[in-house]
Image (tube, rainbow, N blue to C red; front, side, top):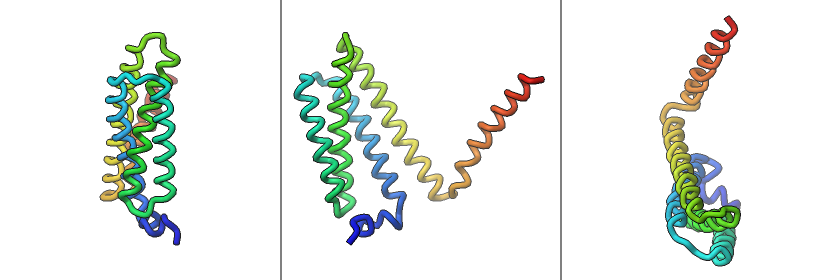
Length: 150
């Protein structure tokens, strides 16, 4: 049987969105932590690649939502271990890596929270509510262009 049918993902696509937002939020938290911890680059890269590989294997073999969540958390931990190690290779000052990880972690967390908020809006109000901000932005841009051309 198809594992996507078993997990009820095809009939409930929002479940994937929530699991992906969990991935983003856990990646942000792990990025904060890994930015503060200094691990040797070779160890961090090898552990990070291993954890991402294990996470992808869990994704392919998952038969429940819990295994999907575990796979996303393992993958996010692996990516969070890879990011500072690769960034420190290209950086001259190790203090830059901490600030990079802080800002990238903040970006991941905000993206995950935004994804959850959008899915709540879509679940309760429908997809049409997403077009209202696009319409407002379009009207503002059109108004600014029209004002400059007068």
